[in-house]
Length: 619
Image (cartoon, rainbow, N blue to C red; front, side):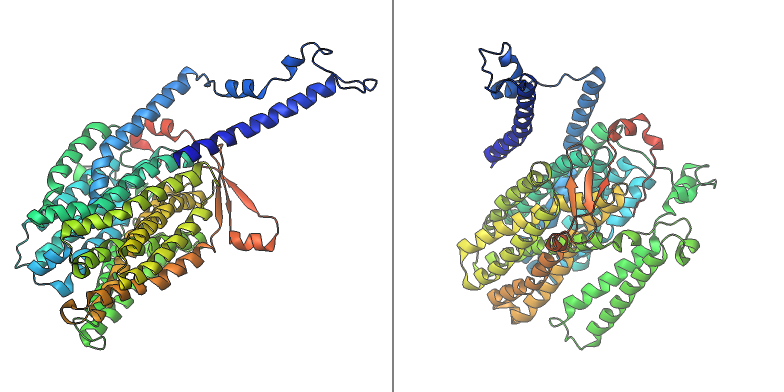
């Protein structure tokens, strides 16, 4: 594939050069031909013809000569290169760790649930982490502006370490202690996730962001895929090592971030909500309280309570308690009510509305104007479906290898490695689509949704038939489909809202874990209901769990076909299309594209004064 990429790139580079050479040749021939000259002029008849008609090979050789950079351009390029390597060296550890924590317990899940005597509640080991890792993304996004990038990423790493320590030391008599540790771990991982995404978007253009984010998407995908394998081997010693391994890596990450990035990252931003007050004066404690008051505490609380109660109802329904019992109906109704209240509150926090006037200093955790935009909602739902597929493949295929095939945790982790080739192919296809062909966001989003839907559909049959070869192939196909969507989804968001990087980063980061959270809840409920007492018919339960995901996957395909499109131009700008791109093609009318700009040179601007960088609107 790399060879094909190089050949296509060379062909695309040579094509305009050949056309330019042909035009120059025609122009010189016309200038040397008079009306009385009917015969073509040969090289012998026309001196200097060889100078006027340069050969294609000479043109290609000249094109390979590197452009001489001015001292300012060379210095700027050097700064960008050094900054990129500092980002990779400093952020590699914590970003890989937060992805690893998502799946490292997949191979240890059955052992943990058995040792705690909580097999029917094993979903909460996953859900406690996923709920907080999704819900607190918007909180941490605000922290990046309120207290600066460096403070936020360090605080999130320390939070992750505290949660890991609690999980490591949790006694088997206290399942609640393990869940609390997992929840705190999820809070820290969400902070690392959003901090890294925001830092990567701080200093680059749209084209540069595509390259930089692809590197970290690959880190995320490899860590996500290796999690079950590493967890399987650690479980052979003790499942506690799945959490204890975070402690030394986290400490090293804290030191590296401080040493490499402390002076590079943007500091606390000026907050318009505090303008005209004395909030920025006084003692350090006074400034801290003033800045923390801009966080949407009511929205965070409503969201956490509403989603937590809904998940509790889904987890208990049909397995622990009957669906019609008060233990299920009460949290279900209350959860729906609180979720609706959260939506109403976030809408009322929009500029000029009632709650915005009451809570004048606070910023909404979910910006309503972005969520109400057509393409924003569709891309969010497509990413939501990708999260469902990713978590389904990793967690429930581990249960299949353990309960149905009778493999050890380490062997089950090896089986999940077939997910990895798909990740690599998906990442490669995503960067190829953004930088080579077709330089658009809709095709990779739609194709990724399609291959994921096919993979989940066939995987359900393969589990029922116990066809191992097909299972491995579908794991790779699902990995390709999920990773193919990640980078184009971020680019699509940023294309439509080039000046609202932090808010878009929130939505993009929130979609996948939230989708995984809801998907695993649904699948676990189906699994508990179909596998029977003590999960004696595990194959049937896992088969129906995957079947329950099929409608969501194909709905994502239909949604992707309703998207607009973003064209990434070579000069750093981009064009967008409002409305459905597919519908526009079917109408055969002109496409009303809109040119958008995403500022170049942000690296130089942001290095002038990190403490007074203009604040962006964050979620």
